[in-house]
Image (cartoon, rainbow, N blue to C red; front, side, top):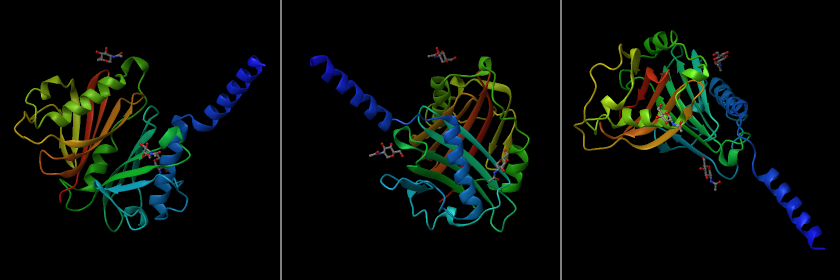
Length: 263
Ligand SMILES: *[C@@H]1O[C@H](CO)[C@@H](O)[C@H](O)[C@H]1NC(C)=O
Ligand SMILES: *[C@@H]1O[C@H](CO)[C@@H](O)[C@H](O)[C@H]1NC(C)=O
Ligand SMILES: *[C@@H]1O[C@H](CO)[C@@H](O)[C@H](O)[C@H]1NC(C)=O
């Protein structure tokens, strides 16, 4: 009797586990990101699988209505690129629209609760257009088009802890005088801040000076392409909605992209 009831409990547990935990796959994350791009292209969110019970939409660090936000406008997308974080069950997509009536560079993190990539629980976008820091979508496009974001050989990948450390150290440069020297700069790295281009990217760095730490950091980390994207409030310069993405190749910084909205 006893063993039969134990088996019954085990069977019930197995059912529970199967029902509660979907696996967060890279393919699933990329498919959700692709549905987001399709929605932005059409200006129609009907096909997005938004959670009915747990969904937040943020635009430039503020809760907003997805029905009236930038996703309600069709955009011609000239370039898009997505990274996937199967640990956080989140993705990061950057898109550039330079040839429409109003140009945009948009950095979006999408999150899925409970590992369920079939349902979107948050869309969190930094939306830059004319007036944003060093904004010129056509120029940004011309730089980013030339970059190689291919999958890295295993031997060239930094681990998750290191990617997060470098993302944090970058954002700490404004408040911590030692942060800049803790970053493994590549000799031939490129920095694209809005449309401002700096190469090598480790030149002329901030070394402390601000009392305000860049806060509200949200991460998407993808070791396969060596990327960390951090959305934050760029408080060192005044509560600015911001995205910083960094790619490391062979443990060294290769690319930095920033999208910063002035307000
Ligand atoms: C996104 O970029 C890929 C190539 O990297 C392209 O095949 C795809 O059509 C683009 N998607 C949109 C919606 O523009
Ligand atoms: C809602 O979704 C967020 C991710 O966007 C997750 O962190 C949070 O745990 C979810 N809340 C519930 C109650 O499921
Ligand atoms: C991650 O990478 C860093 C830098 O290369 C290294 O010091 C650390 O030991 C690595 N951590 C793990 C868990 O492998």
